Image (cartoon, rainbow, N blue to C red):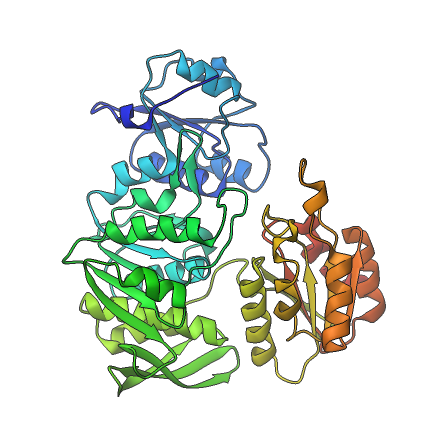
Length: 479
């Protein structure tokens, strides 16, 4: 079994050929693209080589081996980057342990090659990271700051989740998930934050964190990394964030709904998918902003970006130009199609809080229309009973709820989340029509029976959900 010491890792000064293990992950493929664009020769390996990442890597002319093995390390690369999906028992990792080849984890590599030479702007938090990161990157671009970024979703404006810029800023999505099998600390501890945002802190990732206190411990370490001349922008509506922010050695700017904070959200008005809102700074009216998104949570995300851009010297007019031009992120309230007056929306929400905020935003964004929530519990956390009761409140904004039963987690059969129980509890508490289904085919059949003109269907999952979005759109076109 492989035993690697992350403290021995280094990237050699003369690096030409880099091999990436687990290259087909969204972040790993983006890193491969960044390194390729930087002039390195890249090869990769993965157990599952299929679209869209297989096509993305083929366009970059990066050869990818299907399956793991010692042969993938021949010819010998100058450096190996080991993805989070790689386990100690992986045959290629075992082969690596017997060879004198330097290696890095994904966040170590990102830090070494791209972050350390730039001013690091890190967006962290249990929820809202991807949207907030994307809005910041887009706004910096429109402010002619030419940012570099790596984000966990496809930013529509750029058609990709990464960009190499010539400007001074690196925008990083600060993921609290663990780094690699040889480094169980959170990814964001490698990102050298100069300015950071914390949007929220809740219990999540039950597969790696024991409880909320374990997650707080990771965020404490993250906040301790911000230098004294840096800045922490913290959502003070969240008591967990307040607790952690008080330990910062740098300046802290608070944001949220109270006018006692440094930055506060004022009156909001939503029209045609855009939200206009007033901003208060230190209790006084500061100005009005417009963002091409709906929902209070997205206004708060925008407020955090506003505080950050103000700190680096951006004018209100310039930042608002970026906010109004923002085209959104794939899989974040993304309209996949409209057929016969029925709107099909795709969203990544899976944690109870994210589901609640997403559905509330859609209800506000599509007033007077019936909102049908279709949910697939797919993550290791959402498939466990730990959030069973929390999900009941999450669906209260929907008019009708369709739930897929989760796939089992080996070893946790007695602690499995039940969609049937959730459907019963939603129906009982809110008198909503809520049902559970064994598979996606049954959900599509039910949708065929009930959908009518004007309906909004929100499909919520952090996975592909058996391509339910396109299948539903085809089904509507044929009816």
